[in-house]
Length: 124
Image (cartoon, rainbow, N blue to C red; front, side, top):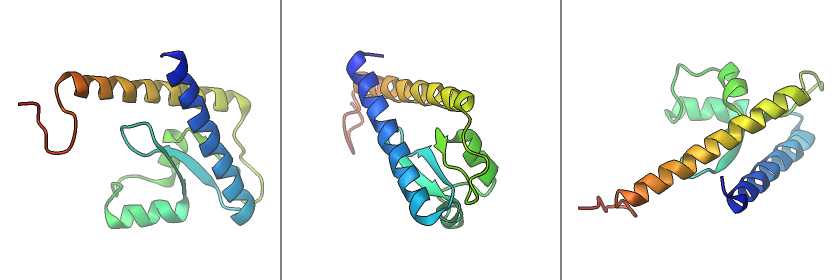
């Protein structure tokens, strides 16, 4: 990954982690930093919002809160402060994030190469 793209990825993850920690301090709930879309954006989600998205059909009914912990790039501790992200796990999650971000960049480049530049354009 190019240095500027890597820097952008680092800053994006750092900002999402900061927002998750800030929300955790305000409410005490556990928050998860999740991939939002194929363009590399991240969202911060708690259990309540996860259930709402599941109810509305944006997330499959087969998904569970445990899946959030596996798929997320960062999570805050529980309300009582237990089960915080261990430094070893944080390093693995960070690598997972960079791999996902690099894949988003690759997919974006492939779309541009194939002539798909915007809504409604198929490249023909």
